[in-house]
Image (tube, rainbow, N blue to C red; front, side, top):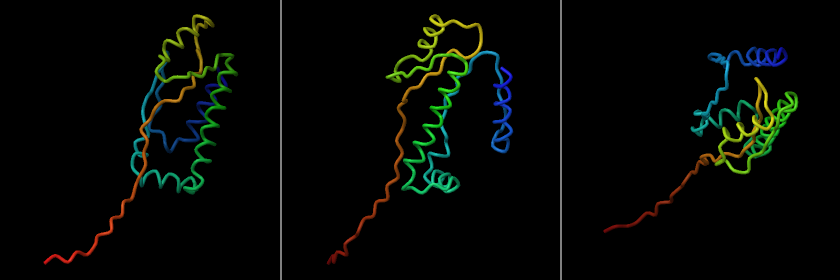
Length: 139
């Protein structure tokens, strides 16, 4: 528990300039959301610029971030001796899966499990359409 608190504090200190507040809870909390500034093409480009990522390197960059998140999630599950489970469909109820895992592998407090699933998302792509107008001689 102490290392978990220490890690949390390190993250808060590291990203202090980007954190507006900290939410603590005694039970579980599920947060769903999106990065609204990514919905704007200019903001996405600015983010990549700040990260020194060229567009031609974006796929590699995104895969690297994804891999780091996955490895971290696996490490957390293993360090807590809790199950890490991949769900083959986003339609499965994560709450039901967690309840089943809790029944099979009971604990009084702490992490129940780590679930991995590919969720559907809105695909954003910006297109630039250039129309060539022909000079029509109208009489």
